[in-house]
Image (cartoon, rainbow, N blue to C red; front, side):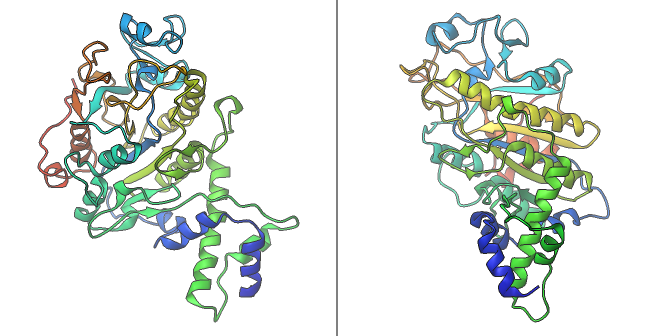
Amino acid sequence: MDTITRRRFLTASGVVAAGALAAGATTYGLRDILGFHDEEPAGRTLVLVTLYGGNDGLNTVIPYADPAYAENRPSLAYGPDEVLTLDGDLALNPALKGLHKLYGAGRLAIVQSVGYPRPDRSHFRSMDIWQTASPERPDTTGWLGRWLDTAGGDPRLAVSFEPALPPLLAGATSAGATVPGGTLNLPAGVTSGILTGLGTPSAGESPQRARAAACFADLVRVRDLVAETAPEEDEEAGGDEQPATATGGQAPALDRQLALVTRCIEAGAATRVYSVSLGGFDLHADEKGAQEAILASLDAPLSAFVERMADREVVVVVYSEFGRRVRANASDGTDHGTASSVLMLGAGIPGGRYGEAPSLTDLDDGDLRHTTDFRDVYATLLADVLGADPEPILGGWTGRLTFS
């Protein structure tokens, strides 16, 4: 196809500029990931789900039986008849029906009171701490980026389906790959044959234009794979894309990201780590209904993904940059807090409650005190899922989670 025609089409068609730029900036496209295979299976696969904006952990994993919960949240608290009970002390948010079922089947682990010393309530700084695993001082590399450095540095080993590479996948000598699921707004009358032609390099064109063709083909491929793989959107769960507030930028809906992860895993890709995200949790007012809707958009695709991966060596971890303060604010929302729960599911993860439950009365300036350091979680994932030595990657950290 004539390169001038392609260039004009790319401009007129409304292909999201950020998606095209992100695709053009990465060394590898989706086809490279799907075609990335090792001769021998490398081990388990890690899927990391980042909840941007500071998810309210106390209204996610709910200490409904603790009187201090209702006392501190008169209008925001859930009553015992509203929640999905786990035991006599804890329950899940009513939006988390799929995860509740997985917990009942012994397949969801809830690690309680996870945080780090001297917590920071800034979205940016706290997410930076979680992604670099460096609470003491700023770092320029992510904890999974440092793992990638030790694992050979091939970007295809760690893949993000977010608009930009998250810091956690940036190493000192290497970085993961980004394969964004950009949106295509095509003019009327464009056929599948035309789309195929637009993604086909032309003889004699410059490397830059050939790369533009490849990027466009990748975006088309992503769209088609999502259409084939993603479940139908649940309008009540919210099919719209959510902005990842404060950090992370806008990402495709979680079901679309997980659909791409599904396709790559089922294609036998040798990728060991996938990063996906969901935003919109920075709720300082009228939180109860809004958080419940966002949690529904987490629960449906996540529980479906875990069920589909039941016979595969896949581990899923869900975390946010911090939890929220115990006491509700005057607007029936919650303000930036500290410790929260981390959810773990998948191969080799025994379900149940782990870690010490947080006290709602023995607080640190109104915030929960962490009882499990997040580096214990990371060390366990590095050793047991990725088969790496955690100590050099985590600055000499020796802690681990203990599953009973």
